[in-house]
Image (cartoon, rainbow, N blue to C red):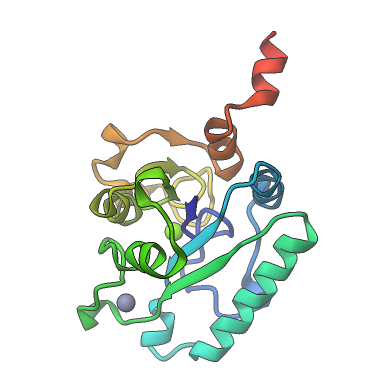
Length: 191
Ligand SMILES: [Mg+2]
Ligand SMILES: [Zn+2]
C-alpha cells in the first residue's frame, strides 16, 4: 500500500509541516498503520515535499522528521517500510513530483513492488493521477482537503477535481484500511 503523507497520515497545514512539533497524526492513523502491519501489508509513503526545493527546510531535517514519524508508527505497532520523497520545486519539471508517477516507479524498480497489486491512498487529485499513471489502484480519503480534515477550508475541495467521480472515497485512513482488509469489524457488527 502506498500512502500519501499530508492529509492521510498527518494533518495538512497551509504553511507546510516544517518541524516535528508541527506534525500531528490524524485520528486513527496510527491504529490503521498497526492493522496494516498485522495483516502483513507493506506500507510505503510517497510524498511531495517542495518545502525542500523552496528552501524552507533542508533535506537532512526532513529525513530526521521522517525518522521520528517512522519511530512513532513503530511504537504504535505499525511499520513504514520506506519514505519516498520528491523534494523538488514545482517549477523544476522533475519526474517524481506527483501527479507524475516517478516515486511509484522507484518503488517498483528499487523495492520490488508490483504496481498492479498496489493501492495508493491520497487526499488530492494529483495522488490519484500518479496512481493511475503507474497502473496502481487508488483510493481517495477526505481527511486532507475537506472540512473533515480541517487542515484546509471547504474551498479546497477543488483540489479533488473530477477524482470524486471515478475513485472510491472514504473518510480517512482507518476507513481505507477497513475497505482494503475487508472491514472485518464492520461485518462482524452487522452479523
Ligand atoms: Mg496530501
Ligand atoms: Zn521531484
